[in-house]
Image (cartoon, rainbow, N blue to C red; front, side, top):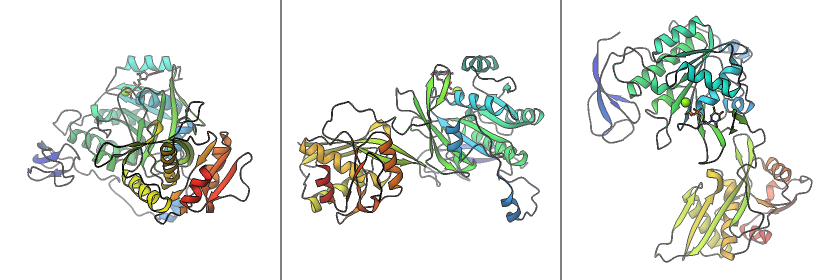
Length: 448
Ligand code: TYD
Ligand code: MG
């Protein structure tokens, strides 16, 4: 180990700099660099030391091992189950259910292999009590209340743990670093040490991480670079639904989501969640349109609301929640030039219901439909879905997975769909009348 030296570590991104400056050279934040006299822990690289040559073709031919977590929804977010030797970081606000989820998973994983649940937040009794309340069969699950990473790694090896849960990474420390738990250097070195253990031993490590008010994992972004998979556990405030979302995954698709409901006995997975964000009144109202969005590999029915109102301001407002504001400006320009609908004097608001973010251009047509419906004070039909991308020349462009979207809409009782011409199926799903449109004016006519 090299002798201690002083470095300056950014509390925002975790990067270190040899000397102090007012602005972090790495992430550009101001006044975030603080001095640390640290005994540098060497070898934070992820691969084990003493490497030898391997033919990738031979390795690639080996069957991929995946362990089921007991929740199909969690497995799908992981990309098909937990990968041995992987490190997964699960972030979420306090009280959202991270410990609950991982305790349920740990108990289920322990049925087939050694599992160690290390808690730095609660006592062993508290965790055992929760396991009892959850009614999980945690008999073979090993539990320890410990915050020293070296000791946990030792215990994991002793117990022959193939899965190691760390609750939470913010409470962990390594002896080589002097700063207190939760400090950037501790987080970084604790994580590095656990990553090394995972890679060297093939243990799947699950790290719980708290998030800050801004919604990022407390401490450095650098944690996200060090691990294989980053998941966020989120919920719409007050809702019992929980969504787990992959934002980085070396073993699966990003933006994949899994849906759970928090209940008396812990988390229950919601197997068919496509319409959970769709809770509309029974009466049709102006300014509401339903679209079929794609989240990861599944279709979701999402309501988009629009409000157009005469503005008292010289520069009327354009506000979008859950939708890209620049995209909204573009849609308004197309609406003006190609459909003759001018909203220069109006405030325009767009809201995607349920705290969902619509990042797909497939939502364009729903936004336009909601706004025009609000402007004309005419509701769209309750049994109508729309999707399609709007081009700058006023054309309606096709979107991926048109048929899947239509099937999902039909499954939930929608009777009419307005979609891009190129997405119109030869044989629409039973009970669904599909209007295929090629331009914004055709679309507005079809919406009625
Ligand atoms: P927890 O897993 O402790 O959250 P985190 O580890 O993310 O901080 O979850 C705590 C919340 O979950 C708490 O507000 C109560 C609720 N809960 C239930 O509704 N049902 C249950 O069976 C359990 C264990 C918790
Ligand atoms: Mg917890």
